Length: 338
Ligand code: EPU
Image 1 (cartoon, rainbow, N blue to C red):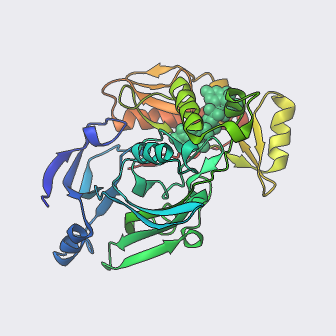
Image 2 (cartoon, protein in one colour):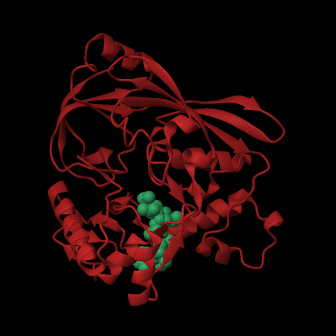
């Protein structure tokens, strides 16, 4: 284990911002964490855990120690005729893991194909796409508490999953390093084709004859048609969360904007499409210096070259202001801003 000084983070976040961390270390095992803890590196000092860097925007140098999760490995803990329980290292690449499971016929995460990032980060914001959230296949996770050096197991209930949220993004933010996540995957998968573009892709097909591989391929195709590939165009996916409002607010908006997409939630509230709101404000495809709003999905802010974190943030703030002004809706970032 080697602690780098003044480490450039540019290749380690999908926004590709050239900032430095004062110290950086790759964690490949629990032992590495225990050694750092014993050396008093974790309990008192400023520390941050970095996964795939696909949901983070650095706007300044980080004056602390970055722990990059590189714990690998997959272990089937239990297998029956119907399902498997699989424990996965937090540093495994999420899209490769999904791809491998899909190939083996283990279902439940096919709709989450191609989401960038690492396995350990998936529960933090309860990643979701095309009608499925990771909480649906989540069994438990193991995490190292940075301040105490203790290893703690979290059940699904303890994680308090919500829309793009968990305890690790709220009350316990920054407290833990997630070392392993266990998933319950199905050998007799039930497909979720509820999302309109997926429904369209399989229109006229008998659901029993559709494989998870086909669903995964359709998801990949939809993602590629709307979302920029961070390897080619620097971005962190949706920059904002979709706002959730009370029914009355949604009704009022619908009167003024009959085409506004609305998604009623089980708790009576209504989710709005931030991408639609941003597009209506004229931002889609706009460029401000090296920062810009993606031309196919207005919820995605892109770095066309050497934008600084401050430039990206300034653009995000201008977008927020105009959505607030036109619709009276406050957008909250989905991306972690440092
Ligand atoms: N829309 C527009 N203009 C745009 C973008 C979207 O009018 O520029 C409209 C669409 O036509 C559609 C609605 O807004 O009626 C919703 O758009 P879309 O289906 O593309 O999904 P989204 O709500 O913008 C969410 C997730 C994505 C996820 C997709 C598919 C959030 C914050 N984002 O986006 O997740 O891939 O649904 O399930 O919930 C991410 O979290 O980084 C991410 C990419």
